[in-house]
Image (cartoon, rainbow, N blue to C red; front, side):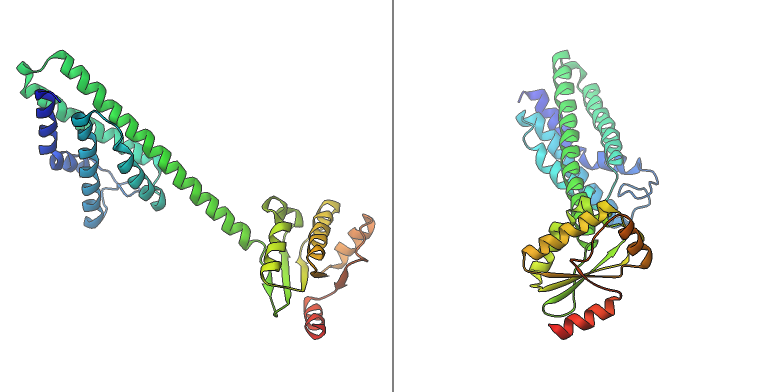
Length: 278
């Protein structure tokens, strides 16, 4: 690192707190944002420390000419922002704000050392520092996206698991209440999940309760029969309850045959019978 670059490096480090304060003072009231101007003193201090860390990371690029150290800050802070649910566009907005503050400080240094600085120095610093900011933003958005996608996946998985709960009512008997249309569960690997839950609970019999199903058609019935067949392949007997008159009538009109499956009118009758038999 040449003499003038070293002096710029040292100058920027001397003004780390000043730049952080200027950035903090530039904040506005932002709903659902960690950056909001009315944040608590603890959050403001937390942001100040993160900004100091960020500035030192950027300035270090001047010293060693390498961008490899940017990833650590980007991953750590992006992960925190994503987990807090802070909108990505707000983080990008504050990157832009601080870049302007940072480059203004570089301009201040150039003004102070004008006679000793060449045009080549200015071009090199501008290229290096802007590339450092650009790479940091790219890394930040990449890590933010990874965490956000993982959170969405985890939420979908949880919702999917909760949407098909097999309820154990004894050591070997369980109940699966279906709410809504049977076809609604198809995209969530419905049959496979039921099999897995029934197997994990070590059930011998599973009752599928259709009391919450408003209507039925051939496609929905095929989905239901698929579940029954898969359960039977595991040695799990299946019974069905809650087939209301209108559903039974539709089933007859569509030629749907429930005769091979044991059915009960009410869930309580099936439970009583199954617990007695078992």
